Image (cartoon, rainbow, N blue to C red; front, top):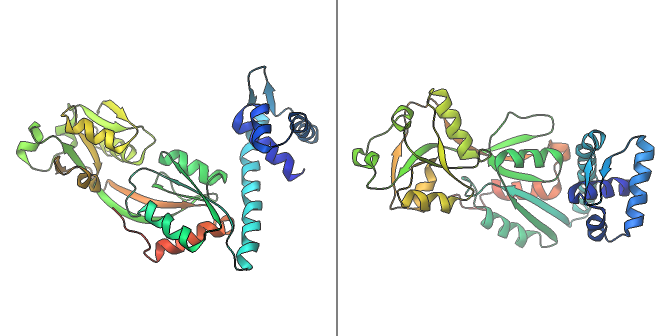
Length: 297
């Protein structure tokens, strides 16, 4: 099994199209097709279902994809490790992050990294914590800053960044704002909620806390960015339960503590592969983070 066969396979799986994958890889479509056929012959099973419009993975193809991505990530790490020993950090840093993550100023950290390692190409992807964990475990990302969604595994480990309580944000004229006291999930059960997609860390934290309290809530207004959430609350269209540091992004909103949710804490972490699979670029970024080369929100 040749590495180029795995590279071609992963590209077709990502693009779901031979022509687009061939253009991205800068190879001929016939050469790409021949490479995939050779891999299928070696494995003695079809890897794709081909149609006139796109290709999709077979069950065998889905099984191979994760392993192929991990193999290619390890090969890339090996190349970068050799370069690092020679005194030059090269290659790519593929970083994922949730929006407005606590405990790290991502832009400042990346700026410091670029000054220190100008030969490394930085790639950034923003997504929910569940997706980011899958991307790191699969080798598609070198590391990610996210909400802790699971315990450490043999493919994924976490380094704690910070933890903070959740806070209710509401319009100053809302009935909750007039009391100014801490509120319980039971007192919020009938409210209209603004919240993020279920994959996002703040949403997962809130859903878990309300489920533990036995309170059912309905998210009527679902958004995918922090500023939209704050805008909707600012227009008194609903309330939000968000990490405490969000209150500083919109000082006009009223912030109330949440009580009766046990130890529900929004904990942010750096997600990384096992130490032996962590790329030199990821280790260098974490070293800057540990040195305090950032400012958290």
